[in-house]
Length: 130
Image 1 (cartoon, helix red, strand yellow):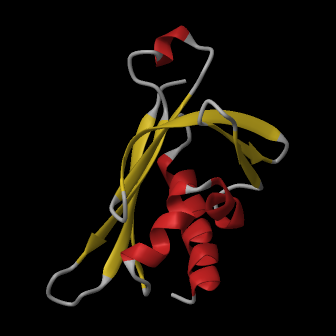
Image 2 (cartoon, one colour):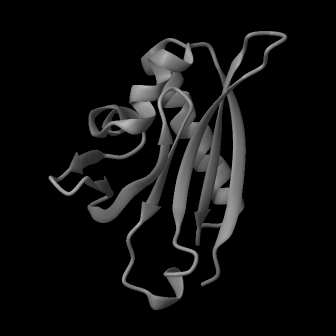
């Protein structure tokens, strides 16, 4: 199945500093993004969704700015362009409003991704009060 890129932007009423741990730590991600998230000594994150394990590692991050998880797959055609999810925190300088930009490159249908992230970001907003 071919991969597609989904990009969504969500305004959130919280500071970048407050949000970043929810996007970059196993305990933060487990609160809203996956059923559970663990990290091992090799810094490989294990995301659990509906009993399925997906392993990923952080390939790019900048404190209070962005984090990108690249998923580790068995498929050889993924080696050039592995699936990933990236969370980027942007601020509108004029309004001081913070946005989470989600980029999801996977084999999930973009419409499904949109519904999924709407729900996930809603959960995150409830947790942070944003």
